[in-house]
Structures are given as structure tokens and as C-alpha cells.
Length: 514
Image (cartoon, rainbow, N blue to C red; front, side, top):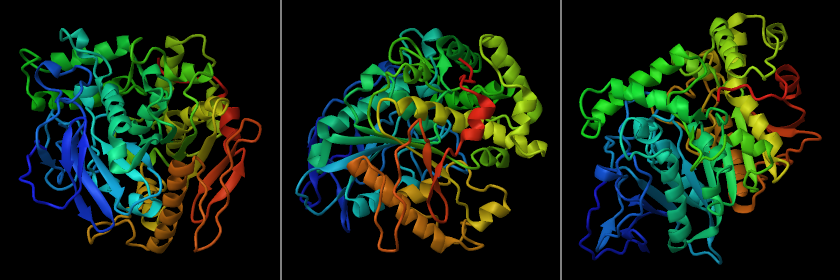
């Protein structure tokens, strides 16, 4: 959105911030501010530079529409809402806050969207914060950040003056803005939870390991985090050089559309040529990210705040369904990936192929899906949880529930399907097929539970909930001696040693590219 000045004369809520005054709108029991600028426009001289403070505007800006989203290719699985504006000037955030007064400032959740590091925005309808703010009495913040070639490519190797990890700097700038301004929206800057899913979850697990993030949040939620998918500076330079090779002429003057075309070409080519490697992700640059995050966890040096973390039972099914190049699910391709990891890191103890296959279904396709799921999501989550549990409380989950239609389509509880329930925003409309074969009543009950558990964690640091509809099991801390996890299904249940078979199969070495 542009910084549209208001003519005044409106009773809607106005909040003064470090970036200027914004007028929100009232939506029943919630005040909403959309399109608040939290950092300077990353254009012109600021293109590929880390986030800079926003220059305060004069007057009052009407915060009644979402800001522009970072330029990206359209993806049918990523609903950006109706007629989204795409522009590199995209560093905006949105706030939902209860109208009713409170005896004390409310806890805050800051959401970092997912999208494979090349898709998505904080304004997606899926992340509408109305229900979470109203039912859990918290302040909800969703943010945009730069993605793809604009945020995750180390363009310094091909453009003078370009900086590393600019997307991560955007998230840090948004958290800093929240610290400095959220009290004006009724939020408590001393009770901030940073949360994200998929790429957003990967950013969260990285934030927990970098010095610049200390003090900016007090709890963390990481859903389906690809925690080990972090690139070396050398690997990311190769990606940037491939982007440059795909764009003729001067890169500084190349259009957003040219970069989007180039990034999607590289986005597909890199994992096809190098299975298990993402083209775009966080970079270990020795500066903003001094060390590989998993090394920080294992050294016992992650930021000691409570962490809620987990994955979905059928993560990889979505990637098969969409024919995505991101995740190798064919056994021969997975074998190639193992060989390359072993060649790159000869000191690693790569599990024997027969031992691995014995832990999965005999059907080759099912085995490939299981191995891909565990290497990309479940094992990284376990490695993070095991280490972080030594310094702070950890709560582990696995999301298992799927409506009948998703089971028929062989999607199951696939990647991202928990989001409707943790946000309380169930899919609806004649075109949506989620509940065409039934299951909506169960889905609504699960949403009530998960919205309650996530909200309780944001409010109190413990994801327990009491519901009028009936008792729910207490969610115990995840500890190394019993490793109790919550399995989320039609009914929740606590399981001890849920992933012991995976540990026996994969061992304790980190199997990932560096």
C-alpha cells in the first residue's frame, strides 16, 4: 500500500508509531491496522540492503488495506487474497487487537509466513488474526518480508554493495518495531512470541540461534521447520551467479519481473540438479548468522525461551501431489542425495541403506515419501528439540488428522494442513473441497482445541487448554528422558517415545548439506 494520508474526522483508532500515525478500523470486537510500514522501502539504493528504519510520515495514514507483497510467481496453493499488489516496496505489517480494555497489556504473537522462501505474505486470508485475537485475547501481528532473489540470494557476489540475509534482517526489523510500538496497540513488548510455518518456521529456528535476535521475543513456535536447510555462503554465491546469468544487462536496473522469472528458473533447477538442496534459504554468512543454527543448538547456546515445535504426519504428500522439485521422493534420487552428502562430509556416519529401508513401507513410493518427510522435517525438528530442551521448555507435537477428502486424495495430514486449525480459519465456500466428504464438525472441534493450545502458549508459555466441550490431555514438556509428544488427531493423546524408531534408524549425526 502507499502511505495514503487521511483527511481526519473519523472515530477509528489512531496509534502513533515510530514510523508515523496510523488509523485502523473496527471490525466488531477487533481493531485492525493493515499495511503499517515497519522499515524503509527496500528500493533504489536500499535494494539488497538490510532493512533500514522507516522515516516517519506526516499526518495520519489510513491503515485499511494490506501493503504490497514482495514480487513473486503466483502459486495456486498460496492464496494471497483478492487482487494483491506486488512491489519491492513491501515491508509492511498488520495488527489485530481486541477492542475491549484489559487490566494489563496483552501478549503478542508475530507471524512469519511460509512459502518455500519464494511465495507468500502476511496478508494471506489464512492468516487473518481476527479469531485468534478475539478468542485468545492476544495481539496478532503478521509481517511481509523480502523473498526469493530479493531476500535470500547473496547478491553481493554479483552486485557491489549488496548485503547478505536481507530477509532475515526484515524479520528482525519487524520484531524491533513490535518491541518499540506494540504497547500503543495494547500489546506487551515483554511477552512476544515469534511463530512461523515451513520457511517461516525455518526462520524461527534460525532466530533462536543468532545474537541479533536476543531480547526481541520471549517464546517461539516452529511449525514444520526445515531447520537444517541452511546454506553456506559459497553455495548461495553459486545461486546468485545463476540468477545473474539468467538476466541480461545491468542487474541494478533489472525489473522485478525479470528477477522473479530468473528466481523461479533457479528455484526449479537447483533441487533438480542437486537433490536435497534449496536454491533460496538463510545463509551462514559469519555475520548476521555467525554459525550454522544446528551447531548452535548442539552447543547449548540457543536463546533459552520456551519452544513449541512439531511437524505433520504426511508432510511430503503435498510435494508429490504438486510435482514440486523441492523434495526428492524417488528412492534413486534420495540415494543420489545420500551419496553427495557423504562425499561432501566424509566424517558423517550415513545410515546403511538396508537399515533405512527396513524402517519404512516395502512399497517404494511410500518408502520414498516417508524418508523425504523425515529428512526434511521430522528429524531436523527432533534434532532441534533434543538440544533446545536442555536450555528451555520444549513442547513437541505431530499433527495427524485429515478429513476424508484428503485421505481419498492421498494427501493425509500433509504440509501446511494444520494452519487452518491453529488459526481457527477453516476453509469454506462452494469451490473448496476440504469437507466435501464430511469432517467439518471434527475440524471445528480440532480448531477450538488448537487455537486454545496455541493461544495458551502465547499467553502463558504452556500449551494447555480447558474447553466446555470436554477435557483435553495436559501437554507435557518434551524431555530427553521420556520424549513425550502430543499427537493431534480427532482426539489429542500424549505418546512417550513417539519417534524412537526414527532415532534408531537415522542415528544422531545431522544428515544435511552444509
